[in-house]
Amino acid sequence: MNLLIDLHMHTHASAHAYSSVFEYIMEAKRKNMLAIAITDHGPALDDSSHKWHFLNMNAIPELVDGLRILKGIEANIYKDSSIDCDNLMSEKLDFVMAGFHDAVYPPCSDVTKNTDCLMKVINHPSVKIIVHPGNPKFPVDYRAIATEAARNNVALEINSGSAVARKGSSANCREIIEEVKSAGGYVSVGSDAHYCSQMGNFDHALKLLEEQQFPEERVLNSSLMITLSFLEIKK
Ligand SMILES: [Zn+2]
Ligand SMILES: [Zn+2]
Image (cartoon, rainbow, N blue to C red; front, top):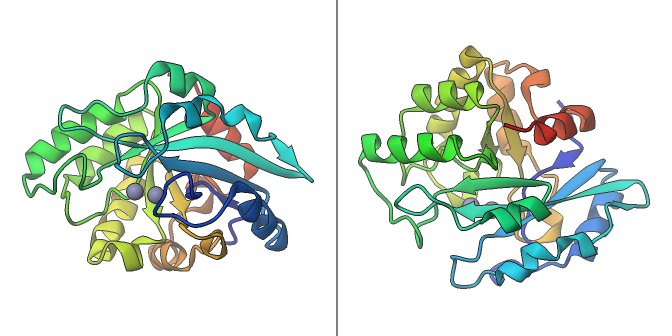
């Protein structure tokens, strides 16, 4: 599998990331990528951008020298299952991803509680991708999540950065891959780059997917056609 679309990366609009949009574009051209998505953290994290960052993303061209640039957000999930991306923001963006982050949803070992919360997020009208659901700090019922995600045209992410950033994710990701496969859903593969050279590095995620012979056509970012049609589906 050779993926030329990266749907998860952070610019220095999230202050704990260190590259600009322009640097990502240069890196994407160098790697012959077809499309990249700028997905900075939602405003609830202490070092994230103001919501105006997301409202004004159409300042970035849609196409630069043949490279498609998608505008997204990695929204934070609150304890009440709401997210820090309101309708005004989601309407301005190409797509919305959401996930658990310690500072907004404290790590919790209660599988039922986490699963109930994530089920509601999967049913949120603007959420298209659940990021790093394999994070061991937030265990969920993977079968329930994969079934609900497939039913709602929401993809579960296999985050390539988890190998380093979220130790202990691999076993959970294997389970997620199996469950998405049997539920007939989609996975999304993202680098979760916080520096431009990490963009397009999918080694860890691809190893897991290939080990389990996950069908390429069920990888959301395996072709631009699938990516665009999946993200345009209105619920
Ligand atoms: Zn994240
Ligand atoms: Zn991220």
